[in-house]
Length: 168
Image (cartoon, rainbow, N blue to C red; front, side, top):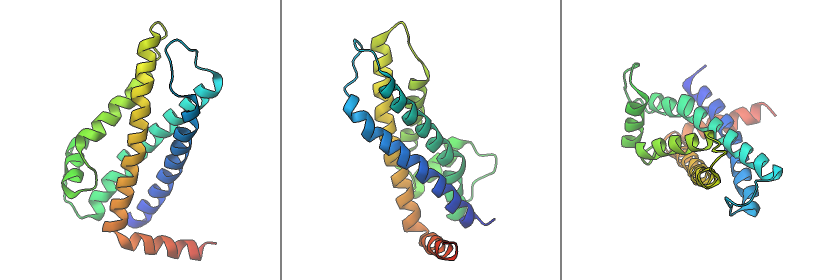
């Protein structure tokens, strides 16, 4: 499989995660603001779970697949044993991501939701609120990366249209 074919597959995967994440962010609005005094009902918990799952899947797909492949497609030489931070720094330099620090903040937001804090409702709601902010930023970052790919690798759009027309 060529890097271009792989990128199309990875982008389709990310698009699903991003769309469902976005829908969760829309759905949660009717439950906001969350309060430490109020119990989180099952519907709100279901939406939060959906957002957390899709956030994680989108971040993993981008970090493991899309971002490294951008470096390949951009013909940006980077050692195979480079750290992920080195790859992020290179992606920042070529304009594929706004900043390495933003990615790191998204990792912190993801970790914030991993803890339940059953004995401290204030801390739990604070973690959820930080995570919700991060989820919105993750969706925006995906859009930035997607836009970068469309601008810098326009042949992918043509290839995608060709494959769609060949496989109705």
